[in-house]
Image (tube, rainbow, N blue to C red):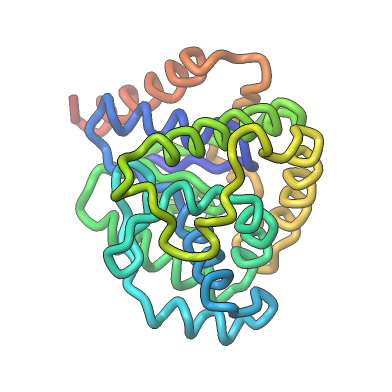
Amino acid sequence: MKVAIDGPAGCGKSTIARMIADNLGFLYINSGNLYRAVAYLALREGVSWQDGQALTALMRQHRFDYKPDGSVLVDGERLLAELRTPQVDAIVAQVSAIPSIRVEVNAIIRAISEGKDVISEGRDITTVVFPDAEVKFYLDASSQVRAERRFRERQEARSHAFSQPDSQQAPRDMIAQTIPAPQSAPAIEEIRKNIEMRDQIDTQKSVGALKIAKDAEYLDTSDLTIQQVYEKVYNKIISARKAHGRK
C-alpha cells in the first residue's frame, strides 16, 4: 500500500508520517530530506545551486539511501542534523525546483518503495511520485504556526546532535561545523519569512509544483493536536486497507 501526503513546510507531514510508519510498520520516506541532502552536497562541494547541470552531475556521482529515522545515507555517510541547518534551508527550495534533480529524487523514492507498504510525504507525492496511491492527504497550516513548529524542530535536532558521544559528535566538514547552538537559532519571524518564500517557490515550480490533488483529503492542522491529525490519517488508512481486503 502507498500512502501519500503533500503539504507546505511545517504543516506536520513528517510527524504524522513517522507516527503512522511506526504504528503500522510502513516504510517512511521524507522526500524533502533527499532534496536537503543534495543541497548539503552542493554546499560541501562548492557547487552552485544555480547550475542545474553541475548539481545533477554531482548527485549522480553519489549513492543515496534512506533510513526509517528520516536520515539520508550518502555513500554510507549518515546525514540528519546536517540537513536542517540555516544554510541548507536557504537553498533547498531552489535545488528542489530543478527539474532534473526532481527526476533523480523521484526515481530514488520509487526504487526504495518497490514492493513495500510505504508512507511518503513531500510536495508532489500525491500528484507525481505516487499518483495512484491508495490514500492521499494534503496537510496545511498557517505560516505562523508552521514557523513555530519548524523552530522547535530545529532546536530539538541540534540538541540531539550535540548530545551524541564524541565519536559521533565531531563535525565531518565545514557545513557541520557551522550548525549554530540552540540558543543562536534563527528567530521565528525569520523562519516564517523563509517558509513563505519557500511556499511561493514550491507553488510556482515548472515541474512538481505544490498543489492539492483532486482525490486528496485536505486537512488544516493549525488548530489540531498531533493526536487529532494522526487519528484522521490513521482511520482513513485502516478503511482503505479493509476496502482492499487487508487487515
